[in-house]
Image 1 (cartoon, rainbow, N blue to C red):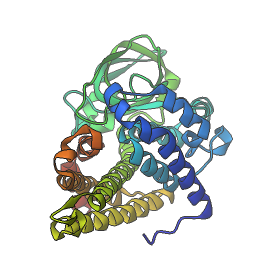
Image 2 (image 1 turned 180 degrees about the vertical axis):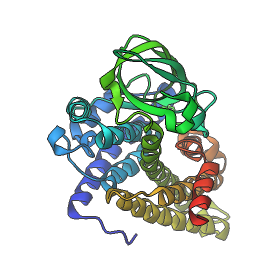
Image 3 (image 1 turned 45 degrees about the vertical axis):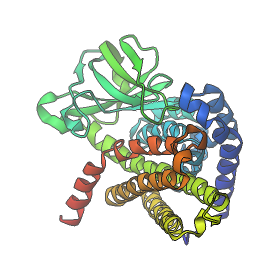
Length: 376
């Protein structure tokens, strides 16, 4: 790959890679069965990596989207669900960093730098890709707001300390009537529903949320009223880059398993990698993973400049998620019957990556974004 990391970025990559190999990868299969591992997260906090994007004045490292992409990429090689939990917290963190008041930043960014987790609450049972049709309402009162409604498929919702929640303050204005709020766990009226029994990404914590006359103060408002949808779409640019990082890590993991297996498995008198049918699959895997990495870090660097990167993020996510699924399928095919077994992990990688074609905007939505940009 021709993308050149700085010496500091290489150090972060080495730290994230070492942590993943030592702590994340050995737990992958267990977390797929048992779900979120708090012990692993506590070990992760000890590395300080959770504070990467938070400005130094609030206790963070003050680093950029490139460093965040590096960490997410490396974590995903060990377990995509754990990487997803970290990136979702960063999506919400980025919204706070960009739009919160100084008082909010001192409170919430400091807490996040210390290891608290955040949840990004946009999707609803009947408002997925069409997020502007959300039904959650925030009714303004003399002292603040009262929220009623529900959210669905919310990552970190059962373990979060802070929730960034999108709700309509002016239903008649559609997307322009959506505002964002920061809510702390334990707030009366905030109800965490049953955990989702998911196909993949089973190590990440996912629930629905309900808001039952949830009273929040005026200073829970993030930024300006009516700007919540804009903030969320900005956040999704970063989320789509993180999804690219996760798919890239998953693809590299699947490729490595398939390559190693093909070197040792003998059929018809020679290692199966010497058969063209297998060798060509491996060639495609190597080619696509290299392309994923280039698109990933190109988009991450663009975002780090402060420029909008909606097109580049959508292109990268679409490309990486689509080809990562095919790489996982090809890895299963190379392993044959063993690829269908949980023992060899590639079936888990396939299940995990499928979410990358759905979450943070489906691949169909990415094509809408891309076509809209290139035909503008």
